[in-house]
Structure formats: C-alpha cells, structure tokens
Image 1 (cartoon, rainbow, N blue to C red):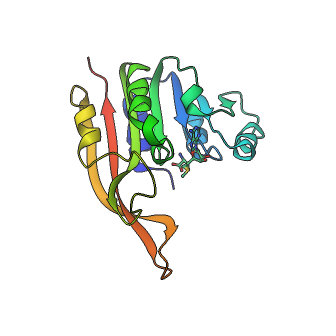
Image 2: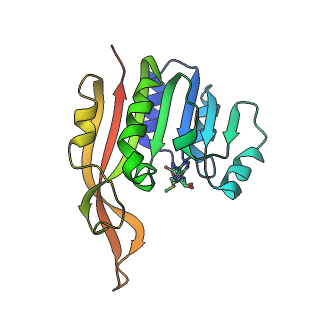
Image 3: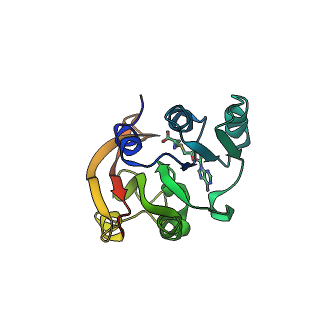
Length: 174
Ligand SMILES: C[S@@+](CC[C@H](N)C(=O)[O-])C[C@H]1O[C@@H](n2cnc3c(N)ncnc32)[C@H](O)[C@@H]1O
C-alpha cells in the first residue's frame, strides 16, 4: 500500500528531483516516478538496489550506497521512511542534511521509530518523542503524529514488538 503521507506529499511538491533514502526494493521510488518525479533511490543493500536497477526505468537513478557518504543535491521531495533507526549516532546529522538539501517549497516525508517501546535500547540514537517535531519548528508542518506501531521484530514469547513512531510531512516555506 502506498503510504498516505507520500500521496499527500506528491500533491504538495513541485515536480522535480525526489530523493528516496533507504529505498529497499523501490516501491516508493516507483510511485514517485509514476507521479512525474526524477527519483534518486539510495539503498545500501546490493541485492535490493539491483532489484530497483532491474526495473530499468529512466526516471529512477539508483545508488547502492550508504546514505552517510552520499553526496546530496537539491530536491523538491525527500522521502525517508523506517531508515533512521539504522543510522545510530548519525541520525540527527542526516536529518539536518535532508533539510538543507530540500529546495524552497519542497517537502519532507519522514517516518521513524522513537525511543519508547519494546526495542529496549536495541537501536542506538533513536529520537525522543517530539524531537523530530522540534527539529522542523521553522517549517510548515502539514502532518505530525506519534503512535505505537507493530515492528518486524519479535519478543521472546513470540509476540510482535511495538514501538512508538513519528510520522512527519513538512514543507520548507522559508
Ligand atoms: C525497513 S526498510 C524501509 C524501506 C522503505 N523506505 C519503506 O518505507 O518501506 C529500510 C531500508 O533502508 C536500508 N538502509 C538501512 N540503512 C541504510 C543506510 N545507512 N543507507 C542506505 N540505506 C540504508 C535497508 O537496507 C532497507 O532496505
């Protein structure tokens, strides 16, 4: 299912260059390309990057690379969903890089786990509740929500781990 935040984001953003961070098999990238964006998909997993490249689409440029060493350009839309928890102490720096690399009137979509829930410190550097919102205090906030979601990880008793996540869609209006 296409993420509702991404559907809203493409309505708001000027068609131009979009960056999809941690693109996995390119599901979001493909949606953005179909909506008229020239997409740069950055994915550090070689197998997944190849899945995107194999689609052979002119509108999607794939970089099999760690986002920490990626050379950002300017984008009208940046999508970064369920990736920041892998970045540990680099998380906040990457968010700043995302903000700086967004063109005026461009939009950011970020969905990320926060440091509340059953991960129990498994992932370092998770943002605190409201921290992401504060980092976007000088942007136009279109959507901001925090709620517990089911993760792909399991507890010892087999139950699915739940973790608080932040959902953000913001526009760079200054
Ligand atoms: C949980 S998946 C999320 C995929 C997709 N963004 C989505 O919302 O469905 C996280 C993806 O980010 C990639 N990833 C993790 N750390 C990364 C990094 N430092 N640089 C680039 N990609 C990364 C993983 O390989 C994986 O494909």
